[in-house]
Amino acid sequence: MYSRTYSLAFILDKDGWLKEDLIVSNSLYKLDNYIKNNFNGNKDVRKTYDEKISDFCLNNMKLIQDENERNHHNATGRIVILENTYKDERLCDVKQIKVIYHGSELPSRKKSITKIKKSLEDDNKLRELYLRKNYLLSQNELELIRLYDKFHNPKYKSSVIGFLTNRIKEENGKNAYYYCRHLTNLCDLLEDKKKKKVKLTKVNSSKIEENMSLQTDLPYHQMDDEVEQLSMDKVYKKEGI
Image (cartoon, rainbow, N blue to C red):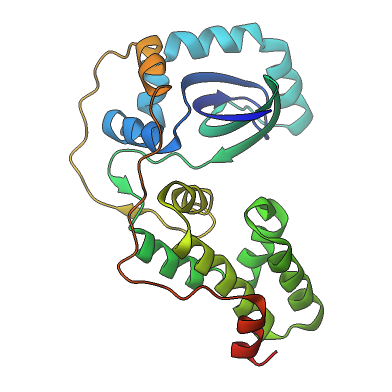
């Protein structure tokens, strides 16, 4: 049986397996809201969890030294959100998601879709979607990208973008939010709200973890209009493929 949690984490490696979870929740939406309401940036997170991060680094000092020597840099770790997937309580997959801090905001579903469409017109971003975030794509969409890469027919690109964005339009709030959050960095979705900095308060991480684990995702902003559900045949017909 599979389960999933989300964590604000300090990681030392590229992929997020060497990590120290700072806050854990079963709700990405709730975790996002907590972070936005309590942290202005990664420096605030490091300050709040300084002791926990320092202990983790001390316990993994040899790994840090080996990694820095191998890659000729002086890494100090990164603060990210991790999507942790478990199979029968065993961690089997980790995905990284961009952190949204106070002053930044994910726009409405409708506005996010507009930005996703525009962004994916860039062939480099479409290729990155295929290579790094293909778990968001259906088999039909994967095949359309392969056809576009082979034949360079813009109608294939238009179709895959149409399929993906129409699915986001029609999904329930939780799933639509999931898609947009995983595309936040790739498609430059975040907006700067220029808000006054939040005042930091002492964090009781165990209490936060206990409370947040009981929450479920709240709906992402609903669309302002109804959208026709397109079949593969309809898209092909519409695009003249």
